[in-house]
Image (tube, rainbow, N blue to C red; front, side, top):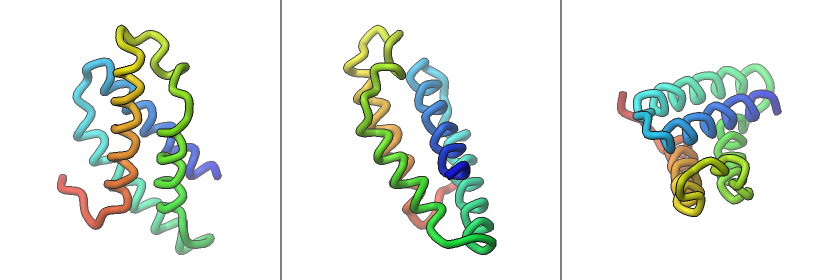
Length: 101
């Protein structure tokens, strides 16, 4: 659970940074690679499914009420839509085969 929470928190933070206009694409790719590597280690040491759990939680987080995350945005509705798209894209990338550096 801590593994999942840590990575979901990191990706939601990156979503907030992206919304503020910061280019986070390199950070996203790096964090995806780190997540995959760490998940393989955790799967070998504990049980399988760590990467899938992060992806599933990101999808769940994308459906949650984003009002807290977008409360200061000039366009809260647009910010919520972009946040959802960002989190779903990261979940898709985690489930994909490779991420180019």
